[in-house]
Length: 251
Image (cartoon, rainbow, N blue to C red; front, side, top):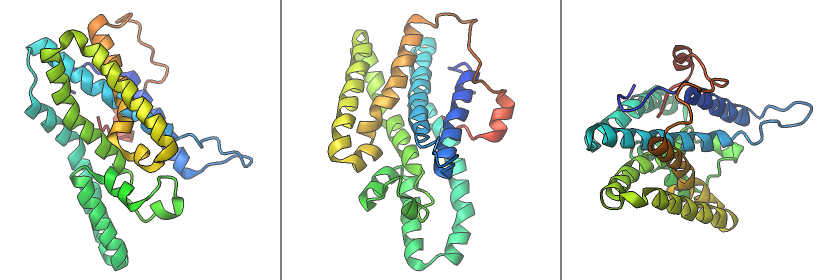
């Protein structure tokens, strides 16, 4: 656990809800011909908000406690959390695809791996014209899910630099600038959803409002504190050890 952030069991509970929502969405579970989980993709949006909140809180807490921020340590922590799991999945799946897949599929598979490793798979899949709801297509893209990981990693690269600059030179406007970025991204997402739905779905600029929503929450918490440090609602919380045995923690 990061020394600049306190463990929040309710966030792990929220993660579990988000994971289950996405799983049930892709499972296409229906009861009496009613798809109760047709909106389960909202789990991805929840993850983005959580990521924005946690990353911003880590940065602000480190600045508050030490007066400085280590980019090297920050990116090393991100790499330790994400890369081992990502590489394990790639290494595990590679022999099966190599031996059983046709050559054209293997080439696409290799390209998706490369784009995932350098965290641009969101734009790679957008370039291919693959929609996340095209079930007949996505079954041949086993790494399509890494588009959201790429969005987050792009955010991790850009956001700390921007936030540190704002705090250093425009500290009293930090909240206003975060709000400005939030609304610009939200309006762009709303506009492009009607004209360019695919790039709107995959790109960081139009997903940024979700990450910045979490950043604003963290900023308000650091600035004003929680309403009550002792009164934490655990109705969606899980035992930490139990949760970690069930779900990977990506953030």
